[in-house]
Length: 280
Image (cartoon, rainbow, N blue to C red):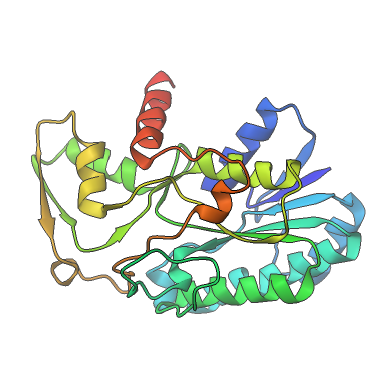
């Protein structure tokens, strides 16, 4: 049996769609069905279900709110909640797949970040997700930690939908051009998560995004390339945000590729995503 936490979120919904296609039995829970911040509830639920794999997609992802009004909730969900799930997973012998972030790095490195590169989170969300990673490593004997970045997909809010929505009411958009990273289609990410468990890959930390790299400005240009509008570059200073954003958070994908998983480029992934959305 498979358990998916955060089953109603952007990533959990994509994972449910994939598992449905594969016709595999699973249980998916959102926060209404299982409050991961409640240790007793988590212990009881997982002890009763006895899953062999737990895909831990539940997370607090309001990056800017985590700096102030959401700071306590960020830590409660991403650290304490993850500890509870990890402890319950270990108690029943389940494999745990934990989703982390490029924000565990400070983004000052010019090259690519390997999985073993020194971490140095500069915002509260990154600090909490790193603490979650450390909890998983300390508690679990069977775990996969998957760090990802710039996630977009069919379910929930994301940069692609935001750009498409703004394009309907604006003839000119300004987008930050001095932050570089790798976009990630949720479909690619969940396929990799399932690949790790089904192919019995080594328990470890993995980086997974779509291949290639771009700035947010370049990403926006590609999203809107068929639209009659201007996408103008601006600096991070011209578009201030509460939470620090890494300037260069390109993660090395070698370890993921070495598992035999084929990673599409971010342009290919975006094109497939837009095609799929247009069919809905």
